[in-house]
Image (cartoon, rainbow, N blue to C red; front, side, top):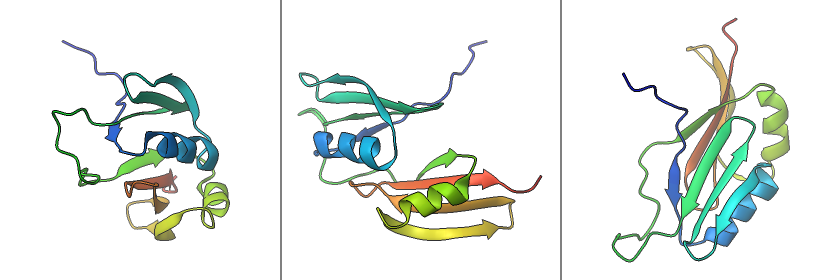
Length: 122
């Protein structure tokens, strides 16, 4: 049976350079690969990876179309919250939830929702 590897989402953007800058300068990601000819980049931070690309001419793209959120498990969520809360548009502030997570959410420069959570049920 096929073994699944960690998921690596691909987001579409018409602001590739700005998006790379947001993820690198605001969130601390590293741009591992960037191909200007393909309008594509791959970024990572520790075990989290994300790809981004300008949609090609065969794809209709007017705005972010992802209807969910990107959830990133972290340790030190309070430290991350304190670092990001004044630098980003906030979706919801940090809170403790009944499912045992302390989390918050922001919007990236495209409007995609990024949630950050730490397990507090232990």
